[in-house]
Every structure is written in structure tokens, then in C-alpha cells.
Length: 109
Image 1 (cartoon, one colour):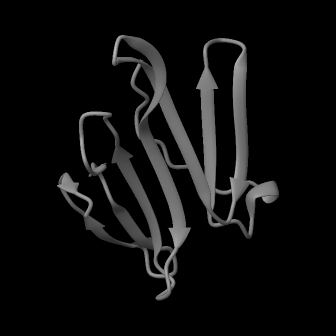
Image 2 (image 1 turned 45 degrees about the horizontal axis):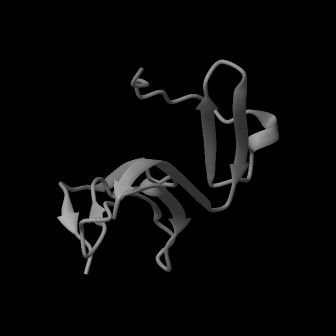
């Protein structure tokens, strides 16, 4: 199931935090928390050199940059790639309500 985009007002417990993360791993495993930066990595089994390994497939990084913009980047990984693939950088300025950038996929070098 692919989640739809949702925005909601910050609850009292999330006031003052820059980001929040919600993770679900099946019906019973859930994690929800706010934070000033976030790193979430998802992995899957891959066959490499005749061995099954657990490899990172996607990571989401969220932080505030030096100019005060909030930046969320989604990176894709493959054991066959030399560099990660930036899938979706999204930037915002919560103070003025503008979405600053949403760019297509590019290789990270």
C-alpha cells in the first residue's frame, strides 16, 4: 500500500519540532515521533555473489540547512550503483509557506 500525502496541524506534543516520522512494519509494528532531524532507512533482501544479504534500498533524510530552510531528501541505493540516486528533494520555509524546490531524480556525486 502506498500512502497518500497528508498534512495536519501540529499537535501540542509536536510543537517546536521541525519534522515528524511515522513508520509502519505490518499491522502490529508502528513508530511515530517528532524530531529536529530524521534519518529513516529501508532495506530488502538482495542476492549478491551467490549470497543473500540485507541491503539498504531507500533512505529519507530531513534536516534544517544553514539558511533555515527545511530539507527532506529521498535517496535510492543499489549494490550495482556506484552512487546513490536522489529521488526527491523537497524544501520548504515554514515561516512563509513556500515550497522552494521539488526536483526530479539526479545522481549524487
